[in-house]
Image (cartoon, rainbow, N blue to C red):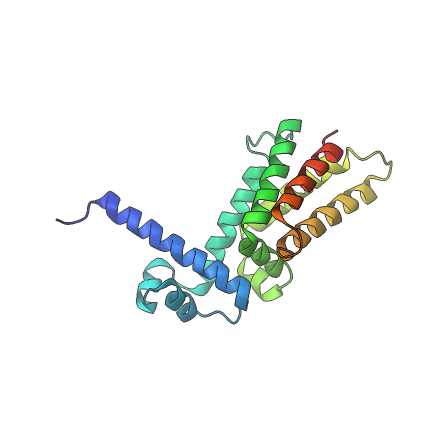
Length: 195
C-alpha cells in the first residue's frame, strides 16, 4: 500500500531533522569550514544524493539551523511580542535559557563559534541576525534598567558581558559544573535579577 501524503511529509520532516541534528554536532565538533556535505550525509546514514533532496548546499543547512535557533531565541525573549518583558516573562526567559545552555550545548557551541567566524557570519546575513540583535538589546536593556546605577551605558555593557560570559561558561564546562549546581545557580540568579 502506498504512503499517504501525511506519512510522506512525516518521513521527510524526520529525515530533515536528523540531517540538521547531525550537522549541528559536526559543525560544533569539526567546525563549519571543515565539515562537508559528504560528512553530514555519511554521519546521518544517508547518501549524498539524498542529502541534496533536502538541502541544496551546506550553506542552506547552516542557514536553516541558524534561523530555527534564532527564531527560538526571539520567542523566548518576548513570547507575546508586545515589546514589554513582564516579571513572569523575565523568569521564564531565565528558565528557558538555562535549559538551552544545559541541554543543547552543541547548538550553543555553534552559536558562539559562528559569532567569531566572519566567513560564517557572511553566510548568515539574514533577517534573523538583525532581529536577534534587536531582541538581545531589548533583554539586556530590560535587566540593565534594574541595576541601581546612574550610568546606564556601563550597566548595559555589564549585563551584556555577564550574560555572554555566563552562557559561554555553562556551554563549555559540562564536566566542571553539574546540572544540579547550574540549576541552583539559576535560582540564585533569579533572586538577584528579578527582585
